[in-house]
Amino acid sequence: DAKTTQPNSMESNEEEPVHLPCNHSTISGTDYIHWYRQLPSQGPEYVIHGLTSNVNNRMASLAIAEDRKSSTLILHRATLRDAAVYYCILRTNRDDKIIFGKGTRLHILP
Amino acid sequence: EPEVTQTPSHQVTQMGQEVILRCVPISNHLYFYWYRQILGQKVEFLVSFYNNEISEKSEIFDDQFSVERPDGSNFTLKIRSTKLEDSAMYFCASSPRNDNTFGSGTRLTVV
Image (cartoon, rainbow over all chains, first blue to last red; front, side, top):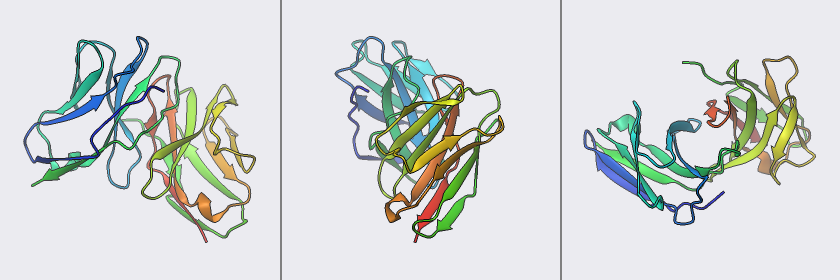
């Protein structure tokens, strides 16, 4: 799997938007950008994924740079329940397993 | 929403004993996985299973480990002779193809 780089930790205030960055400068044309998160004492949870265009779902939005070398996961209005480790992962269509990095630990301040 | 169910939530076993961790994947999923997470460390891939056979395994998944889908609904991970360093959270996951849905995990403590 191609490598991603994320900040170790971030803080945000409750009810404010959060932008979680991810750099993936060695991304290949067949790599999809996936985001998972792991809440405390839980298993990882799928958040969103995309290839080239920005994506929205009920949990978050994914903004992908035009050159695809970076992306940003956007939580539009953070709640305390969004405190988790967020993982940015590159996967091709042929990959089924997930290779996790260290992710970004997001702290939400009340 | 369909979920992956793991039992037990916590298992304590003595070193050298065999342990079986159980998982019920989502019913229409075709791909099954085990991952583990040692306390404070990254989630690590162990094995993937498709069409009743192992499709890929990591270096961690040595001869002490085995997986089985005995009855079309359960998916089990067996550790034959547990070691202290096997203490970890073990997560089962299933997927229709690309995205894994994870269970809440079994915390295995080897004493």
